Length: 160
Image (cartoon, rainbow, N blue to C red):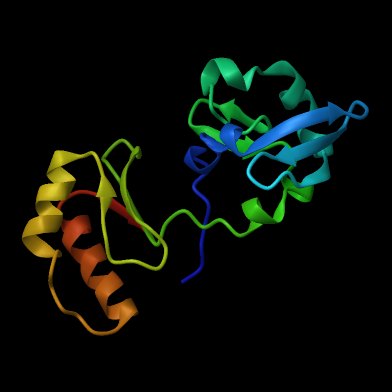
């Protein structure tokens, strides 16, 4: 299974509590701090995203977001320091399976390494409880295929 980012921005939308800008060194370079550990490091704006970083105030869109998150399109997030992003960000894989509704909006996910559903969608939760929860299917790829079949048949788009 290969992780494919859906560019929803959810992963970075609460990172403002974890990563902050300590200093702007020049037009493209920043010294950031991890608030939890106190560690500092340098990041550089990706050349193709520098103008987006300067033209959009992320605090107005998502007040708790990482200061480098931006939205070039309404539901398409990007990291403006992607090439030099911290290891914490590089290691993040937000889902094993992502469920999208008929409009392509994420409505639930199964976190990486688990068989548990995370959702606020009542219909998705009900289907999960009826068809998936507690079922014993050996083998992760077989289990994923089963989940895919059940939810695809119910009208959800399944990304894994």
